Image 1 (cartoon, one colour):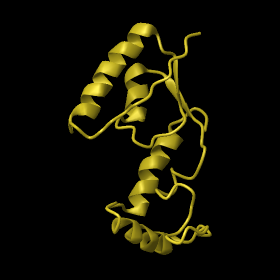
Image 2 (image 1 turned 45 degrees about the vertical axis):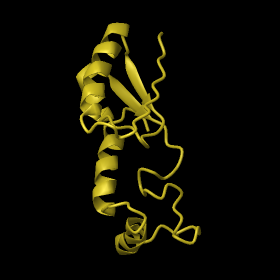
Image 3 (image 1 turned 135 degrees about the horizontal axis):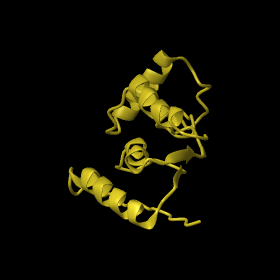
Image 4 (image 1 turned 90 degrees about the horizontal axis):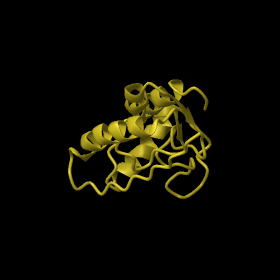
Amino acid sequence: MLFCRLFVNYLGLCPLLPFVLCDVLVRLLRQIGIARIHVHHIIGVPIDLKRLAADLDVAYDVTLHDYYFVCPNINLVDDRGRYCGEPDDSACKRCIEVAAQRGLNLDILSWRVKHGMLLAGAAWS
């Protein structure tokens, strides 16, 4: 069995880089015979991993290490560094508005749908 660890260092230098990377990566992974993808995190990964798995016709697994799929604050802490208590969507929106002041433009419901789709497609998570 062949294992291949992929590290992505995307510096935002080219907006087309994720698309180019995905095409090149699909060719490379097909050539070496990848049979499954194991995702540990998606922070900074510019590639649509669900599409990558579909293009390769392989299953993928996701190992969760924190709450990033639920909240961009990763550890469910508010702007004071305290546990947020996993509030309702409206309280999450207020917290995200604070994040917007730091330059992040996020909608918590879209965030959860997008990341939930990746988890839903996983063979194991």
